[in-house]
Image (cartoon, rainbow, N blue to C red; front, side):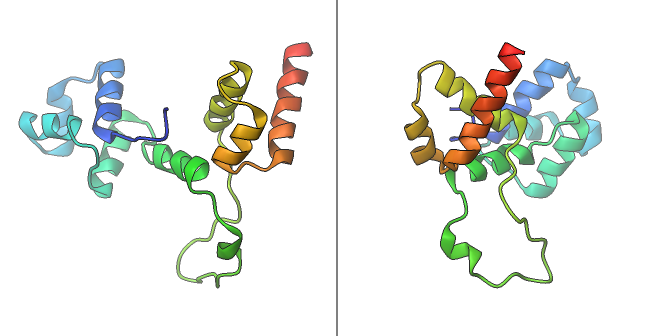
Amino acid sequence: MLYKEIHIGKFIKEMVDENEVPMERICNFLNKDDQFIENVYNSKSIDSDLLLRWSKLLEYDFFRLYSSHLILYAPPSAVNKTQKKSDKIPYFRKNIYTQEIKDFIMKRILSGEMTYGEVIKEYSIPKSTLHRWLQKNNDNTNG
């Protein structure tokens, strides 16, 4: 599954290949040598500052992979809603499902890979939210 297991090095390598970014440009931008870059491609995880630099270089938000994982596999529980909110760090009111997440879920349902109930149970997506997505999908395909 796309967001369940994240091997960031593979995603980075895929974007480099897709965009045909020369190794020389990568090395110059990151101020690193070829061997370091190859090690990144083989790394399951990397430092967040380095990931930010890769995101800028490749013009792709790699952090969104992790956000999508959190939305799908670690949704906030009712217990978290009662915790005190800090004034020092940003607080995100609710899950914001990206279009990629919606497409991922809809594909699983429409292909028969998962049922509505399985999606609700596995990803903790509220029934009303899922129903709204399905309704919009039906409206788009019929209209």
